[in-house]
Amino acid sequence: MTTLLLTDADVHALLPMPACIDVMADALHQLATGAAVLPLRTVLRLGETPNAFAAMPTIVGTGTSASIGAKVITIFPGNDATPFDSHIGVVLLFDAEFGRLLAIADASSITAIRTAAVSGLATRLLANDDAHVLAVLGAGVLAMPHVEAICAVRPITELRIWSRSGTEEGSRAQQFAARAAAAFGIAVTVRDTVEYAVRDADVVCTITASRTPVLEGRWLRPGAHVNAVGASVRTARELDTEAVRISRFFADRGDSVRAESGDFLIPLAEGAIGEDHLRGELGALLTGQVTGRGTREEITVFKSLGLAVEDVAALRHIHSGALATGRGTRVELGGLRLAQETSAGT
Image (cartoon, rainbow, N blue to C red):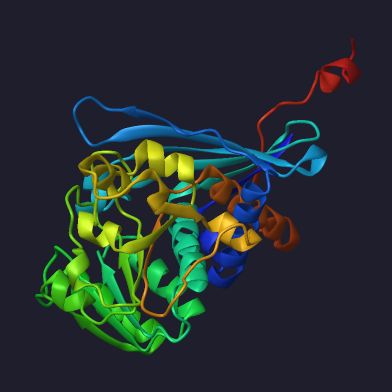
């Protein structure tokens, strides 16, 4: 049985952002229409640390054409200040005809690209059409893909960056700003406060490792759209209660938000919002089951937690491209019956 090993370089070559946004739309549409199986992920915490080990299985599609897969990763938020990614692991892809392991791919690169692509999809569905000022809070591995994704769906002319790394020359924020200016040809500034970064911004992406709010609702302009990405556990949030309360609130998956999202669960526990504050999922927006933005002045929030259907759909796309272009390393891992032994002289 031949399995493809796909590196970070393979993933980036075969999963361009515009294509990934469309792949994410298809995957979330399948989830909304019942053509995907997605249990809640299993997360094992490492003692009293914020670190974790997670397994996220899924089936995308139906019948023998379905894709079976899982993402298996470690999550170490403190890696933000080290040479290592915060998410390290692999995505696995199996077929539904024989159960063959088709591909093993680097999870860090898939996670970064597909996470930003889903934010891009949410922005395409929820932000005002003429949104052109983007604020990114955080300068880690998700920062550049998010700028790429938002620029792919809206006419962004100005980027504002805030990061705990500071505004000094040589800081990670300044390095990110230089790369973004060169890559996208837009005006880029590093701001010294979150308020200064998000005032009058049309789209805001929060991609920090903070466990307490960094974004306050009173700073958001009418009509702003927020992609809340960084916090993924019940006890952590990037948005304060007011930012959630004043918004039309959407998610990648409702069950995940109700089980894991401090951005939603903490305001809910405070009594500031009710269960019905979650207006729906992106997939339901795609199918027309729910409506998105109602007016130009509404503030919309998309809460991203990340879904295995996104990872496996991304790897299915990558695997198809690898077969067509010859990329990847082919290895024999076994999985065949004893045909070789039988033919060898039994």
